[in-house]
Amino acid sequence: MDTAPGTAIGTAIGTAIGIDIGGSGVKGAVVDVATGAFVSARVRVPTPELSTPDAVAAVVAEVVAGLLGAPGPASLPMGVTVPGVVRRGVVHSAANIDAAWVGADAAALFAPLTSGPVAVLNDADAAGLAEERYGAARGVPGVVLVTTLGTGIGSALLHDGRLVPNVELGHLEIGGRVAEQWAGDRARTREDLDFATWAERLSVYYGHVCRLVSPDLIVVGGGVSKHADRFLPLLDPAVVTAPVVPAGLRNRAGIVGAAALAAR
Ligand code: BGC
Image (tube, rainbow, N blue to C red; front, side, top):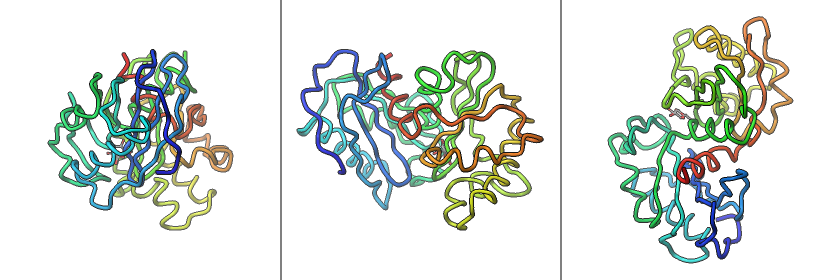
């Protein structure tokens, strides 16, 4: 855990817990759902090597205990993101997490951690909801595509502020390659690509996506979005025909979107 625990949050009004399960860390915070601001310290615990549902649930419990400053259960609404397709609380894909997640009832798995309502959703969808409500997609009409560049490529498609869930554009096959394996941030670090070379791949990816969904705006999130000024200006406007902006919430969007959904 990399932060001090929060205190006295169990009774706060208008707050919810957001938990973002990623390939390398499980991150959580208590969120003021009116503003999208964190009202606790962020707590992060590394994702276990063997990232099965039970092992990850134990880590989520640790994060919640860190937020409460005591062992749970909490009494706040709690939203949890999973890096896979989630339908009615059940996980249906697991590209970057243990295969045992497929078929797992994640909503039931996390329910014992709070007496409040639990919402489980795809991580990129959570980012999309957060960007729409508090960030770079706020008030933007038409088609907005929010992407997260991290271990995989996550995508969330919004139309006039409404989300179409589980749009998996990181798994597009482009030139015989799975997009997220070739153009994702993990490919950049694995292959030690400089930003100019990576931006060429991203141009191919976002160009392809522009032809498929004709977005009015593309929002780019994920941890690497803190370096957005080093690669977004290098995207090729001849193929990436939509304006591209960095995420307003940067890497906080998953936590914030999950909390906002749970509090709804
Ligand atoms: C998964 C998506 C997820 C993305 C980002 C992909 O591999 O299939 O569901 O949103 O990674 O974590």
